[in-house]
Image 1 (cartoon, rainbow, N blue to C red):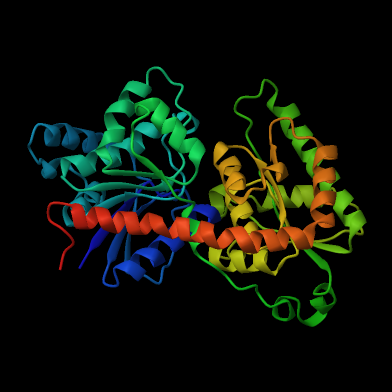
Image 2: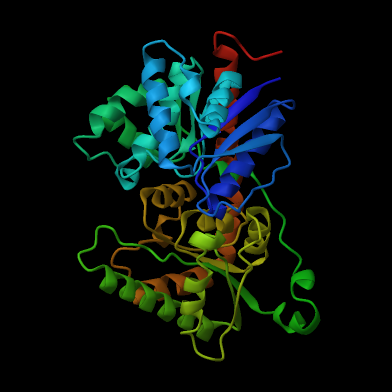
Length: 415
């Protein structure tokens, strides 16, 4: 029986959840008896994820004192002494998961390695360092990476990236960042985002719009995922947010003037700490009173969300995974990106002309792009049917590479 330890999973985000679910299903397709330990990060400690696979979940949002004792343990472990008696129960459970692991996987969601995550990046490297200390093969499962501009952090990254026995990124931009950091000869394979390998049937409109909502099922459905972006590089954060919000209202108002629409606003963040439903509502309430819209229940899991995207006629995404949810369901749309991962995905589709930088976003340009999508919608659907299957195969290759690493490890795959 193979046991896989998954670290660096991003919490309270339906996109990262979708990538995780697809990865677990893919592993079990290759290794039917596989079991998993998932180290999960939820700020809302009441939240739990349920999976079809055999998954033990261990929380990593713990008191600072627990991690101080973990650092003491790590220092002893580096010099060859497993001083497990210093650990609190929470960290001891994590260490025991490394004992049992045949493979350590850095999760396919938030990558955590790069300047974007520098405030807490070292914590996520600690989980990779433990793989080396426990002599377990480590696999980077189709994440993004970079950029790497920090002079004080880059020497640490250069020491720690080689702990990975196999580096796989989900787009070329990240692979280039890693090669720029470690050297052009660095072996990095580019596949595609983990969530792409899973396919979903549209949710039946007759079931979703039943009863007194039946009149909505014939409308032009638009799946909308907006990002209350923090604009970390902006000199005037308030102005940047105001410009973005105004552009979103302009876009949604413009589209509602073209078709008899019904907007499905889909929250990507959920829970008591991060739920973005209130932000979506604040945008929707700025639309003309005649506009038809709803805020989809934030408790719907990523599988259900993906079926709602597939049910739609168009998608508008200013988050990364919603762009994946829409396009891989053969639903055209536009992408407003805040990190290079989304640009990389749109390039893989050959649709980068519909990708727009969230910094300095222009409402007129977005309206023109939506008009273009509407004018060429059937052509775009055919294009997606042509390119998505190959991208799904690339995404599934990530798991095949991980299984190869298991077979190549000194102990081999457990029998």
